[in-house]
Image (cartoon, rainbow, N blue to C red):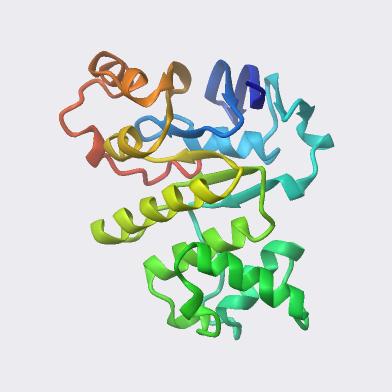
Length: 250
């Protein structure tokens, strides 16, 4: 099976802090892979490195056999952990979703644009939000809208940084159900950062356990074994309750 992502001897330094250390691994095309680790483990940094947003101290990353700088951005959809959109900005949901096609705020949307936006919103169960002002969206709704924004270009690779952040347990279950349903319909590889290893074990086909270095990667039930979780977290009793404040930065 071909690789969607190949990472070779990757190290990333943020100032004086070595955020990632000598990581070598690969994610197959079509996998739903979860990145798990404690606060400060470098999970979000790994996603940012794949996106080319942080410099590499050592190593290389290729996507679908090409270095990132030669990879079409059309291949990649991204949902950040921190949503920087100004909720008071006078725009509605379809405008935000359409910005995923143009990588900027759109002007007048064409009929084809509206069709693509509607299809993306329908895939995440949010077609009823099409004309809702951004400032009126709930936490769960904004997560769905950002997911629709990421998939509107039908990416080959979807990167998700804590997609269940800011929503309650019911909303989190719905979000994972949406992802499961989307992957049944789309030919997409997914790499998702999450602190919830129980959800990862249940939904992801593969799990990547890191704590600055790679501890384990493979089928979720094997990679998230008790011994591997202890190696990453130090204990497993409350690992899934760990909060990730600050992990968006390292």
